[in-house]
Image (cartoon, rainbow, N blue to C red; front, top):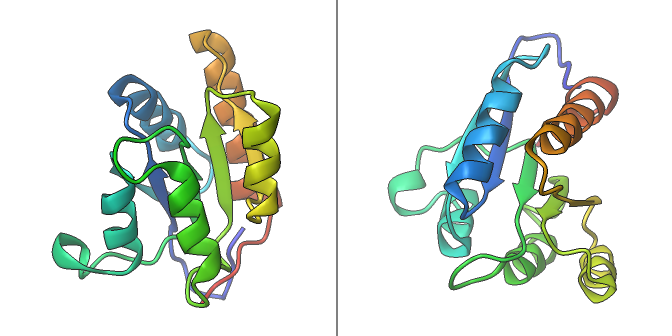
Length: 148
């Protein structure tokens, strides 16, 4: 939880190409106990533009947390994670990989690139909502997120 003496909602960047998964995530975070602003982009290029404050995202708030799908069109989530964790201005931002892949190679690869968490998205909608609740409880309530 962010607490610097001044109220500021937690900024979350969702990088997800599936509109249905994005909508579920947006709805799930909209009823969080902690104020948050969730911003959704659909591909890796847009994610990097958002993070680097380029183009249409020049005035975007730097996110406090990133929810990243691995399987994205164009620049995939693995490339995005590599870019984030290689950039001294971005690498401190926690990245939760949220993907349908439960492939051991993807899991190892993500952690080797310093992902902060790896979550395999359940196919069942009810289970997906439960996983979102756990993510919210940990990252928005229990964890202290860095500010920079």
